Amino acid sequence: MSGFRRSREALVDATITVDGEPVAAVEGESVASALIAAGRAGFAVSGKTGHRLAPYCLIGACFGCLCEIDGRPQVQACLEPVRSGMVVRTRNPEPPHDR
Amino acid sequence: MTAERADLAIVGAGPAGLAAAATAAGIGLRVTVLDEQPGPGGQVWRGLERRGGDRAGIDLLRRVRASDAVLRSRTTVVDVGFGGDEPVVTWLDGDRVGRTMARALILAAGAIERTVPFPGWTLPGVMGVGALQTALKSGGLVPDPRDGGLVIAGRGPLVLLYLSQVLAAGGTVSAILDTAAPGRSLATLARRLPAALLGDAAGFVRGAMLLARRALSRVPVHRGVRRLVAEGAERVEAVRFTDAAGDHVLPCSVLGVHDGVVPNTQIGRLLRLDHDWRAGQRCFAPVTDDYGRASRRGVWVAGDGAGIEGAEAAQLAGRLAALDAARVIGVLSEPAFANQAPSLLRRRAGLQMARRFLDALDPPRDPAVELADGTIVCRCEEVTAGEIRSAIAAGAGGPNRAKTATRCGMGACQGRMCGPVLSQIVARETGRPVGEVGALRIRPPLKPVPMGAIAALATGDPFDPEEL
Image 1: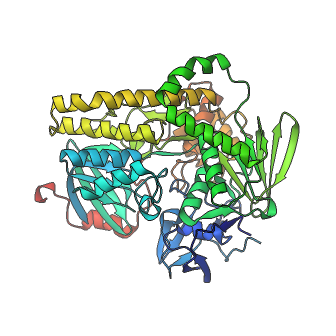
Image 2: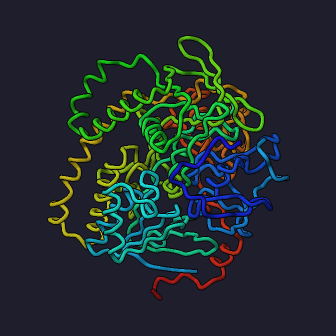
Image 3: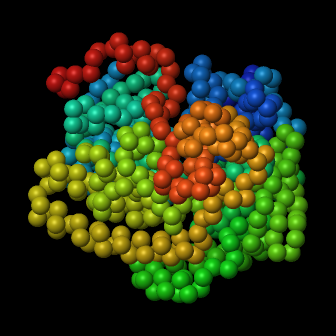
């Protein structure tokens, strides 16, 4: 359950790999948007409280969407456009499944 | 490392930045625009090149593209300093670093959504309404009505605009929790209304249409909503709130929150520009003159980054800053400047009157008042209001000392989200005005920089403007 679905106009034409699993995406949308659509809004688990960290602003300010993209660490996924074949690693200790 | 020289460097490719670039390039200045988003347009015109959109935006972008101006998208400014008298901007494009040295710098970094922490606001699924709008524009994401769907809790024009956009895209909204305070002074509003109407008649028509669309949509609206609480285990599952009728709980799978926007002051703070506290908009903004000239020579600030006035005023501000910069550089004559500036100033003054009316209609509230001790203020370091208040009680009399004591503002976002809240907590706890309490000190780098890029800056070809 992601809380979102794609509008009729959105053309799902790309696949990226997130924590080893394929995720359908729209070429050119932000990586953060693709992860949110796939129900992976928890991008990391806090070391302090164990709470899930999640994106909040989607414009590059909150840093809630930091992940590793194609080997580059600490990338703001909201500023990174999807290209098919991208490899994304969230900062979760185990791949999350929201439900 | 790329090193380049320009007459004018502009940070931000939204309405203000694009207008400044088109104007300056038209006068014959060499312009470089640096923007961290995937494409030009800023937030209000997001996806201008990919999806089309606003006619004024498309026209500006066409003029910039047709000129010699260099437009660098996906380019993040990590530091700004001075080489002698001239601004030097250090930026990062993926793993590549570069420097742009210019005779003038226009900061057009726009606005970010105002942060108002409440219990549960860090749960996955709780997002700014601006973020929901971005997800809609970026990936066509609309709320899924299952599990309660989307509840919007907020106020202001963006809530109405997003509602209209998401309904047009086939989405559904379960409820709107209007957090605007009831009981505004009608006399004040009536006094401001005529000038506001004259200043931005088109804006009032747009606003009326959005209000009508909300009414027609039949989305239930709760008014005078207070005491928001987001609840859920792994993500948001429900929102609890209070209104005149009592306490309520609504299930939801996404909770959109919005309390207006505030200037993004990160670069101006890094440059130690003078800022003041704007009580009417409850935000810090850089001190500038009418043309956007800031407190340091060679630096202008234009658009919402200089105080919230909206996209149309931002274009006028961008043009004014570009004209003034061209005049200061010596490329534009005084008569040519005097020929163009006054009409831009007049149009902008009208829009400002309309903005003051909107500000008075729905003044932002102090986020420190309802803030419970257990609520997280700093998302990155998970610091609660109670921890901050304890530090203040133990002698941390300013935001920077409270940061040192608690780590609030020390995380990855560098206080972008929590900084203004922290200042307002300190002000409330110490009984001092927010303007006097001040804000977090911002230091470089503005965003995380890979070690390899830092090494390239340190050991790569030394930056020598004489060679360019």
